[in-house]
Length: 316
Image 1 (cartoon, rainbow, N blue to C red):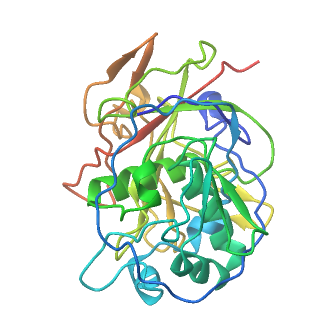
Image 2 (tube, rainbow, N blue to C red; image 1 turned 180 degrees about the horizontal axis):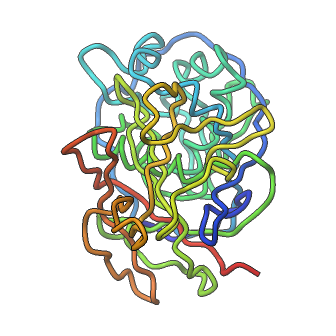
């Protein structure tokens, strides 16, 4: 997909360690419901590079299922007949540099600020450019962009399961529960900007794969990687000071949302049984090879292709 730098809490898990995390974000207030701008299709960005940003989506926010279909239905963001989320921006407020958050989204966020304000920050980072900021109606909360993947979501619904899955994969790549920093970029299938190589030549280590659908009736969230080792539950995707929020792939009794799905390429010591990339790696250029398709044993016969692979600097 696109290549951009973002500050992460620690690395995913090559050489034994997995992802680490960052802090939660402030909550936002609500406003009356508005039902304008329900139609239209979101276009993909032409390019999505930009300045270094921050990614601190805490795992507990994903664990709360804030984008689950029944949740968004209850705020009029989706409905029983339409799974495509409403536009992010209030009708008539979009300028070149920002917009006001649509009332349905603000009501959704104010209902659980602890979890949904961080999620809205992630949504902005994965949707609009760094020069664009989404603000609450009273202006007290702002959500700047980072990776301009779906700028059309400002004024149109996010249409199609492919976009919802790719947005989910981007959001999961932002998982960060511990508040350290690490530069990274994300690359995935789908053509420009998604499959463009990393713009920073120092981001050469394939860290992990992220895939799922946070918008589904039964949300899914998977983390794979590093290349050969199974992911651990002490890294940025799982751990925050409030606790651990990941499940082992084979643990049917675990109720957390994020599932550690195995390695990208698999370990020869396991006869590659833990391999979760089920297609040949693709060359994005500049020595960056990404996985275009992942799977989890949690969903037999299902492959995810709207996915992202993260790349980070070599360990010091």
